[in-house]
Image (cartoon, rainbow, N blue to C red; front, side):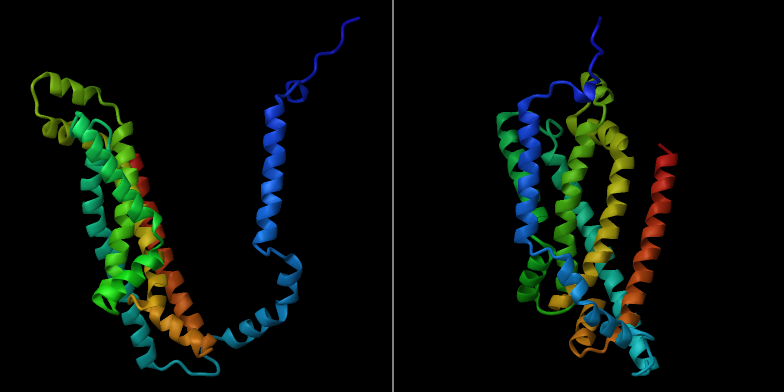
Length: 275
């Protein structure tokens, strides 16, 4: 009699795989314990959540929202959009330039270029790894409170975000057309902007739209440290426990983010359709 074959999923597995699973379980338990994650504590705090909801809804019941206040909130929301747009635009331009030098074998091919490429990648990593709020605090100290500090923060964050993904997009494109142009005697600068960049353009546009969405959300948080925008109004209302008017601002922020995300999704579909 022949023994039935064991299904692949029950076959002999390397001991390293089981050890990796056990290690993952232990690390997960250690992290949950260290983070203080507690369902019991969350459920036990429900009365505070109910109190917040009771004071926040309806948004303008206890403290009437005047036209002057609503007008101030609208101006702060517009300032938030302006910060995000200007910071993203400048960040995209600088990030694209840095990505050209960070891409492998794109602009130069020599030992000296390897050092330049590594240096640019480290600079992009620095911009990307330092949190937004840290950059905001630094720029608030440098240029003072206001929208300019927030715009500079978004610019630096966009450079780090787009610099990395722009470089990867240009590294992943097919270089055959660029090599053909180079073999025909074209300069490297011409081959990059006539072959590599056009091929990577759909990915560059998609990344740029994601960066703008990210900037809109980040610009709201930056106001909490004095970097301009509607976040400053939100922080003031939360400190005074004016939760009803704070919900008005949260609703305005939600509407802005939703509109930007829908427009971004529409333009991304257009780009993908035209590829």
